[in-house]
Length: 251
Image 1 (cartoon, rainbow, N blue to C red):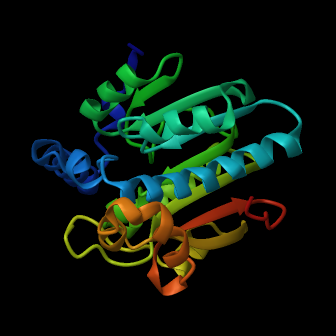
Image 2: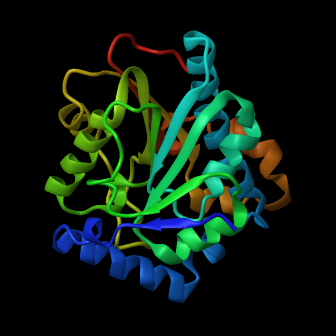
Image 3: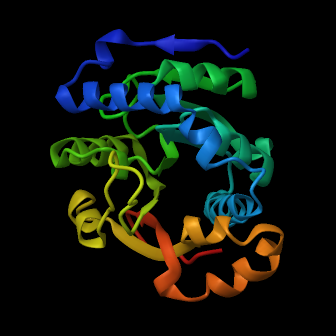
């Protein structure tokens, strides 16, 4: 099991952080992630495969462009599922360093069982105990939508910009639309992203078939998902890629 570094002094940084910790506890008690995002559902598998393919494509493209191994950080890594998928899809050999940061110790314990050789840190992602300009890739997946306080959202974006190297990228995957069944999240607007990451070049792409629809496709998901997701109005999420120098294309 991968050991977890604890930074209690980095866990208490305002009422929004405390609210998030309570929400995560509620999720754990209700089995939210396992029920809602079980890969037993073919639609969920299609959603995650599309998301992971596009994110991994950006990391591989950066690795080829730089010509050397990359340092990778996921802010809000949860139970480590996305980190595990990135290592599988990109190849572990392209990474010099991989770190996952999360506020929820219980989910990090799950990540520690799933991942080996990965540094896991329990802290507030807005004030991580990490060196500035140390990462080539910083990923935030459904992080901003979980934070309801805009000052905290700005702090997370600032932290990501502080940690990224001049030739690196920041990847943001999140909601475009409200989630009617989840009162603890809100959509992230494109104009908000442009405000939170001033001076950076953004490439933005919508993706992810509306999850309630995708989950209803059943055994026909592999057939219908690629067709339905072509309709922009049915895409519930986005992937935004931020760079200091160029507008990167999607691989």
